[in-house]
Each structure stands twice: as C-alpha cells, then as structure tokens.
Amino acid sequence: MPKLFLAALCLILACGSATSPSVVQQQAASTSSPPLTKRCLLLTTNDSEAHFDGPRSGPRDAPVYAGSIARVAAVKQAQLAQRPGGVLLVEGGDVLQGRFMERADGDRPLAMRQAWQVYEAAGYDFGTLGNHEFDAGPKAVRFALQGLSTYRILTANLDSSGTPLDPADPAKPQGLYGKTALVDCGGIKLGLFGLLTPTTRTISQMGEVQMAADPLNGPARQAVADLRAQGAQLVVALSHLGVDEDMQLARDVTGIDAIVGGHSHTPLPKARRVGPTWITQTGCRFAFLGHLDLALSPDGPRLEDTQTTWNMVPINAQMPVDPAIEQQVNQLRAQLVPEVVIGQRSVAWDLTRPRGEYGVRAARAAALAAQQALPQLAKSAPVVGGLLNTGGFRSHTLYPPGPVTNLDIAAIHPFRNRLVVVTLDGQGLHDTLEHGCAPGSDGHGQGLVMWGLAYQCDRTKPAQQYTVKDGKPIAISQRGQRLVGATVGDQPIDLAKRYTIATVDYLAKGGSGYLPLALGDRRCLDGKVFGAEPDCVSPQFNVVMEAAVKDGSLDLGL
Image 1 (cartoon, rainbow, N blue to C red):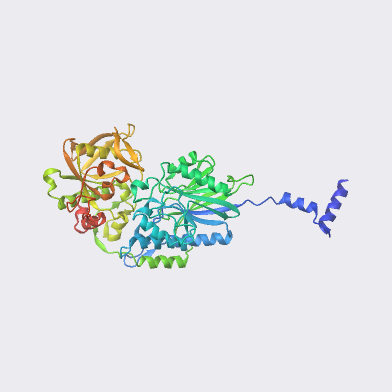
Image 2 (image 1 turned 90 degrees about the horizontal axis):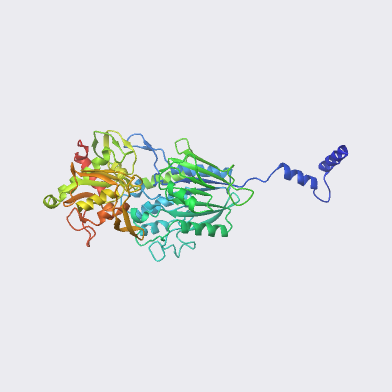
C-alpha cells in the first residue's frame, strides 16, 4: 500500500492536473516553506547636535573633515536597496545645536531650518524634539519646522495650541509636527510617537509652550492607545528623556515594543530590556549609527524577540559617502563664522571632565571679568567666586597645548549665555549649593563648576524640596540636609553676610532648578538690574572666554 501511494503521489507531482492545482502540491509548499517573518529596520541616531563635520584632520588652514551625516545617508540608501520599503531612518532629538547653528550673519533660525533640511535630504523619516531645539525659543523652532516636508517631527506631550508652536499651519495639512504616525515598514504596520523631556521647562526656552501635569505617562498611554486603535502591530517611542527615564516609562506604560532614546548621551552596545520593551540609544554626535531590526511575531502584534536585533556601528571613514549630502554640508560650512587663532594654551584642556582644571579656569575667568566690571561691589558684597553648570560645557574633547581658536571656545561654550552677577545673603548661597547636592546634580547639566567656592555633599540625607508650578520651582518648601560643608575662600559661609557670585544668565533665571539664584539680586555687568526693561548689557560668556584667552589670563596657574 505505501508503494502504491508513493507511486500515485509521484505521478500527481510530475503531471499535475489540467483542471485544478494539486492539493498535495499546496500542502507540500505550506509545510516546507513557512511564512516569512516581517521585518522593519530602524536606523537610529540621537543627540547628533548637527555635528556634520565629524573628526577633523590636516592643516588648520586646509582641514579635512571625516563627515557624518553624508555617511548615514549612504548607509540608508544601501539598506533600502536590499530591503525596499523595509527601512526607516529615525532620531531621538537634540539636532539643532553646535557649530552649524553659528552662521556668520547671526541668523540662528535660518541655521536651524537649514540643518533640519540636511537631515531631510539625508533621508531621515521621523524624529522628535529635544531640549536644545528650544535654545532660541519656540518661534525659531516654528520657522525651522516650516522648512520641512518629508522629515516628520513627532512629539506627543506638548500643549502648544495658541502658542508660537501651535501645530496648525495653512501650508501644512498634517500640521507642523504630529503626536503619532502610522507607517508600513517591511509589511509591518508600525506606530511611532515622540516624547520630549519635561526638564526642557527649566533647561531651555519654551516660552508659552506648556506640558500637562502628567507630562509623560498620560501622553504615552494615549499615543499607544491611538496607534493600536489604528491597527499598529508594533509601537516605537522616539524619546528624548534619558535612558533611566526610558526604563521607567517602559515599566509604567504597557504596549511600547521599543524605545529609540536620547538626551542622556548613553551608548548602549546591548539593548536594555524592561519586560517586552527594547530600549536603545547611540550616545551622541554621530559617533554610532544604530541598527534596530524589528521582527514581527507570527503569533500576534508583538516583537519576535528571537529574531529582533540591536547593533551600534561606528560612523567612520570606512563607510561610503553620499556626495550630494556632503556638498550640502560644505555649502553650509561656508556660511559659518570663520576660524581664527586667538591665543595659545600652555597646558592641555581636558573637557572630558567639566569639573576639572579647565572648568575651574572658566569659573575664575567669569569672576575676574565681573570684578573688573563692577568694582563698586567690593565694599558692600564683593564678587567672591564664579559658578557655572556642567551642562554649559559641550565639547567633551582633550585639547593639547598649542593654538586656541574662536571655534575651540565656541565648541566648548556654544550657548549665547550672558555673564551676570547675583548677590545673595549667606542663606541664599547655602541654598544654592544645597541644590547642587540634589538628585541628578551629577548628571545632565545640573552639577556645579566653581572657583572661589567649595562644597561637600552627603547624598544619603534628605534633598531640598520645592513647590512647583508649571514644571518650575517657585519656592523652597523644605530645606535640604545634603550640604555638609561649604566655604567661600577658605572660610565657612556666614549666613549674615552678603556675597556676589559671577554666573551665566541661564542659571540666574533659575535654569536647572537653581531657584535660589533666581531669587537673588541679579545684575548685568553694566550695573543695571537683570531682567528689567529696557534690557541691560552683559557680554556673552563665550566672548568673555575669548578675551581671557587673548590676554593670557585663562592660562595663568591656579
């Protein structure tokens, strides 16, 4: 019987049927060729800060740039050739910052628009807003967004109706930006949404733009629900929150399959996992290109973990280059502030450690400039020190002894912060340093860089507590106990005395939560009240630093 069955089967397979397909043939195909797994490749970057040049080599007057985004564009094109319709290029915020924001004509909004247009030309599909997008205020963000057509910005946790960043725009039927997007990627219905860090309210210039009282979990849950209702099989968050916050988001909000993160500048060679959620990040400044290869489970709308992969690939000279993007970057570079040598450094500057020797030199330069500009304070409340924040130091580079250029200073201090002074009583100075001991003060921007002042923290003790309104502290509700030692010069702080410190306007406005500075007597270097109308005059801090290089005072021994 088996032999007869096999013979019959062979005859059917060989000859087929003139009237209908062979049932046996169909069954054989289904058992020998299981359905192909649907896949979507996300190429990812974050916190690239328009770092288009990459490493530089060659002589100063004829530099050679390794390039970055032109190589990312070439990789996407190569991947699309292999997987048509199955590749997206996405990013996690903080695009509009750095050297390419400094046009020679000073037009930062135009620089922002042109930088985003480079990303669009390079093939970026989706991104989210980072805090540095707001460094020039929401009107500049709006102008930059109006220059985009195919590169879509997603941010689900802004309340911007009626503000300069209202998404409604007659020229943009979909709006200037969206909360969510649903696309087909490799046959997968992929839902995406974006989230901006709530700390933007205190570390950048959001103006009238607001966030909800629950700025993360509520908008994230709503975005996931909306996308699933539209048929999304997988949901990806483009997050500018930081890796720890991404992990907490994954714990609090179900239904997110993967998070493409940013803000904390954390390279993750291995993806973090919180339950079923994959969490990825590539560091910063185009150091790596992430490859998040999503596989859809055949059993339902979720990731197939055994076939989903994450890799970080260094962006370097071994990658191919898209010549059109390289030409576009070269054209932008020609519009930037030209590089000139302004002085010499006799010792190396180690910007990998903002609290190191260079940071102390910068804080001293701030104090010396304030003392020189406001000698009248010497009798009542002398300038006793300089106080800066770690987030104001941006290059993270080791500069060897040798020539110093204006672009070196611009890379280290890219923000247009002005130098101001704040006069505090001893308690106010104590409260300021206490905030420097707060949770996160060793992290993104809150830590202190000082000259003339010193402090010690015990972070096991209770932290300072604040009354908060619209995401910003407005009063100290409970003084902290973490500050266990503080001196001015070599002397303990006298709570009855008045002290003046030199700082930048960002901190003087209460940036990074430094409310005690915002409550002090704030003055510009022309002696007028800071924040009064008409506005007072104070030099930008990068200009102060350039002057210190030129006159040699920055190079003095500590």
